Image 1 (cartoon, rainbow, N blue to C red):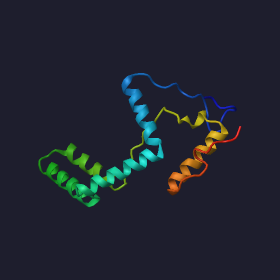
Image 2: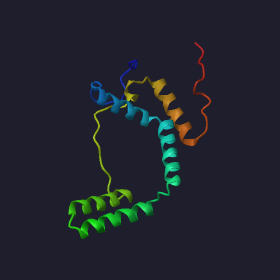
Image 3: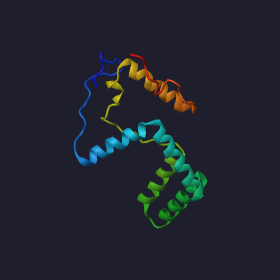
Image 4: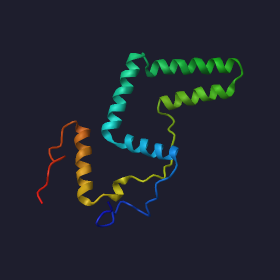
Length: 139
């Protein structure tokens, strides 16, 4: 549904969705991860897996340092650089930037729909249910 009035926060034309099976799957996956409930659940599952397997930042750091040392000692400098870069990413010293041509569907929302989405996201962030979400409005 197109908004009744153009959204101020949407500069320029909205690109068409890319076609193709792989691209469509990536777009859908990106959309799903943008949903706070989905991303929160994914973080919970990742944390459970890390605890189950004893994975910590310290253990990963040790593994990367050992891999780097082994690579350096055998003259595999590309592998050593990869381990160093992995360590930098792990510790937040290096962040990869990805450019996306997919715009958020928020541009297509009306003012009322956008306000409802903001309330929903704030409720999820604070882990308290928003009483107005799912509420029937009188006609």
